[in-house]
Length: 359
Image (cartoon, rainbow, N blue to C red; front, side, top):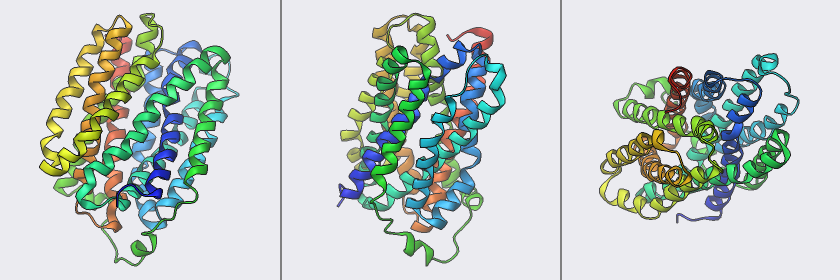
């Protein structure tokens, strides 16, 4: 059975955790308001993804060692506490640059723990023959969260300021922490009784996981362009509501998963991956043309369809036929690839934006 109470609880918990994370898509506005440049946006937003990627080997080993639930709880605690640590920040960005970078690093590690453990947890619950469907439908929780986070946080930030933004992010993460607590980690004892499994780096040398990680990096690079630079681009061009992009993006990615997962389970995820990259790339190529809310919505919609096809297909490709004892590490390779791409994308695109502008 696919849609169990545990599936539903993890779905809701992940929705709130992602909403908390997505509210920080508005954080570049805090950076620029306090004297930061486009390059500062790239560094400060990118260090989050770098920390998330670099810690992935140890996070993945931890998930396979202590279990999915304990790992997820730890990640939720970090995601709940970190936003409120931003409350004392005031004045010029240069006066607290290093402490801010440290907070971004810890916040990134918290997201890495949550992201890797919850997708390992959910794969354990999904029947193998419905892997694409299950990952795809569970992933809609994150996509809804991507829309809900900025949609809730932006009007609160506009009316009450950045402190309210940070408190909102903490509140959403706290809900995710509370909702997942009753769930049992069914496979932890089974994993503990399994013979020693290959290390993260040994798995990374396998052709299948190397391809999976590389494709995930390319995907993450595209996410950096949308996650870190859409908000300041829209502000620069005086577009009224930045959240319109994320709503269109999430609606498209959610909608496509209602049928794409079942198709992928029938014909194979490898057949859908190229089409996902074509659509995501097309959306990114339209970004420089955005000068109004209508095209902003269209770009979000096209990129969202690409995301909706790519994430579950790439994830299913990585974990298919892998035993419970290495699924944490395999999921870590996949999600770490996304974060590595997101970091390099934020850094490279931040430098390009500084020299040549957002277009």
